[in-house]
Image 1 (cartoon, rainbow, N blue to C red):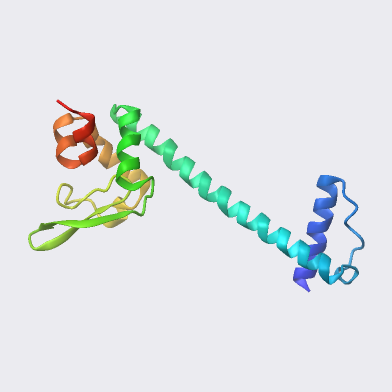
Image 2 (cartoon, helix red, strand yellow):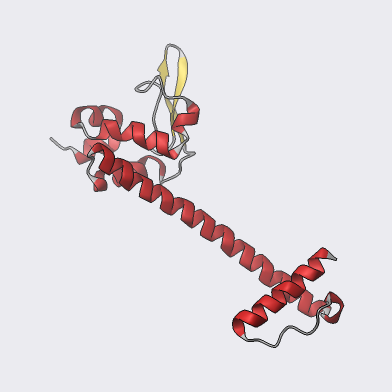
Length: 161
């Protein structure tokens, strides 16, 4: 019954927004099964669009964070985006391939800037997978060409000399 009243509410909202005469009555029983199915489809489409917009907003906030931390550490903005894109495709939960062993333990690249324990032994997983912490820590290394080339393959292409 709650779903029926939600459908009536959505019909009323659509009617108000679009000036439609879809709304028929205050009870869900006045809606035919075809109309209910159509409204459920519309509700599902709206929910999917909301989820897509949320994901886009999260991605935009990561883009903004890259800009912020690049400026904070004096890193070229294009280089910052170049590294983050190439390392993780802006995925703060990215985990790279196993490629280094330190003291017999496997080391994975983690987060937006693919920080490893090999170069950053004090960075916890919670920091590595947090966009703010990862970018703040990683940008410190981008401003110096020597450390940048050692830690990020992307920098080897950026700093060609």
